[in-house]
Amino acid sequence: SSGNFAKGSPRRIMNIQNQDISHDMQRKRKARNNETAEQRETRLAHNHKRKRKKRVAETTEE
Image 1 (cartoon, rainbow, N blue to C red):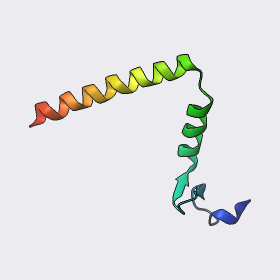
Image 2: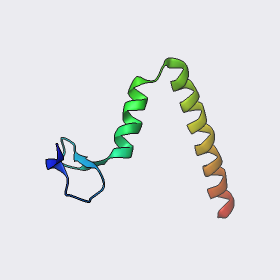
Image 3: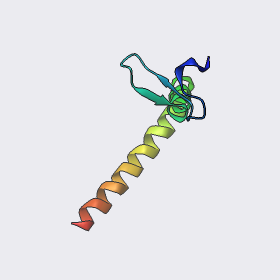
Image 4: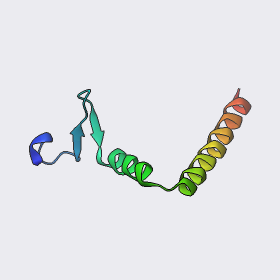
């Protein structure tokens, strides 16, 4: 139903707390909910590496 968002605006819906949820966020959440244990491990390992790299970059800036 198109009642949840204005014509011409990006596709958004409202969650229970009445906050906007973008279409991209919905897609990512659904992908996480449907992933296998192996896919979850891979995603978490990738996120861990990315966050560690970011943390190192931030500490070298200071």
